[in-house]
Amino acid sequence: MKEKINDYIESNKDRFLDELFGLLRIPSISARSEHKEDMYKACEYLKKSLLDSGADNAEVMKTEGHPVVYGEKIIDPSKPTVMVYGHYDVQPVEPLDLWKSPPFEPEIRDGKIWGRGADDDKGQMFMHVKAFEFLVKENLLPCNVKFMLEGEEEIGSPNLGKFCKNNLDKLKCDVILVSDTSMIGQDAPSITTGLRGLSYMEVEVTGPNRDLHSGLYGGAVANPVNMLAKMIASLTDENNRITIPGFYDDVMEVSSEERKEMAKAPFDLERYKNEIDIEEAVGEEGFTTMERTGIRPSLDVNGIWGGYTGEGAKTVLPSKAYAKISMRLVPHQKSEKIDELFIKHFESIAPPGVRVKARKLHGGEGYVSPTDQTAYKAASKAYEDTFGKKPIPFRSGGSIPIISLFEEILGVKSILMGFGLDSDAIHSPNENYPLWNFFKGIETIPLFYKYYGESS
Image (cartoon, rainbow, N blue to C red; front, top):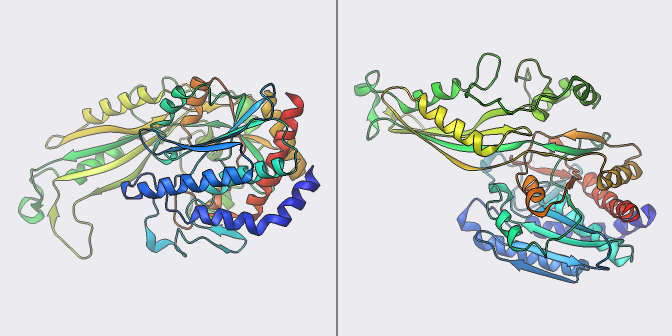
């Protein structure tokens, strides 16, 4: 099969890229209400792509938020069913001035596709559409396939759980296949077996009832920006442990044996630091960089603002200050519990002279996928065929909150066959996706179906 796949890719690679670029040009930013029409445009584009690739039917299904694109090809109800999950929504693109090319005008430079969504998740999702096309056109599809492509992953998938509950029969499957994660490297294939959960908060600190002159009032009135900075600084201690009472109560401690296995994964700390231009990697004391992002929780400020931030000077003591704070969670930590602990603690440490509000924006649970399941073994064999080496099971620091919800609602495990790289700058200016990875994904995914169909 491998030779057939490569011949098919070589014969159609220009068309594949042209079709992907059509999707990348649609600014489907789920966080911005002004892009509602673009969300539907992306849905219609994907619906057509699924039908053109061989789906028996495809439809755009409404939710209370952005729509879901559903498609399917049922070759035999008695055969196993794979459901492909992906998302067509993308992150906002600011700051625009840091992009080397317009984010929604994709182009190829230095062997990479540049543009918002090139990796996360349009590029990786589209690999599945083209792999499916190959299997259908060559009459090699060994099992049933369903697609569920959502438009709210980047805002926490607030409506997908309800969508799943309302469509249990339609979404019935044996395994969920996802490409929305990264590999360790092009020469180090890996399968993501764990994801961190997420608790995402927004806080507001209010001082005086209006902005004040910083000369007339400075030193006599609590400055909300100053107070917020002190409060945030107190959320971690000198060892970079989070200070919220009860935060670590449910953290699963990983055994020394498993930590030794994790340490076998190739990781070059100096290269890591050079790639992001830092002098030191900083985190919780007693853990390696890989462990800090894979098996330990974390707390980070994602945005902070207040007062005057325009050009030049304005001597103002602001009335309000704000911050967005995310906490990445490990298995057994429940996001709702962490939400409550954070809000209670943050409000309790408000200094005199200010009032504090904290509210949850979104969140979800962590996920661990066993390596002894049939689908994992099929994925592992597929990578081994195309990369020439066995993939490494790897716990990612990222979060895909809906994955744990799939298991809860649909009762099935997910296999995370990611082909991205840490250097792809997802969520940042100049997002990119190597052409090599894009085509390698299309080459590898059909082999998953082959081995999964054989073993099932």
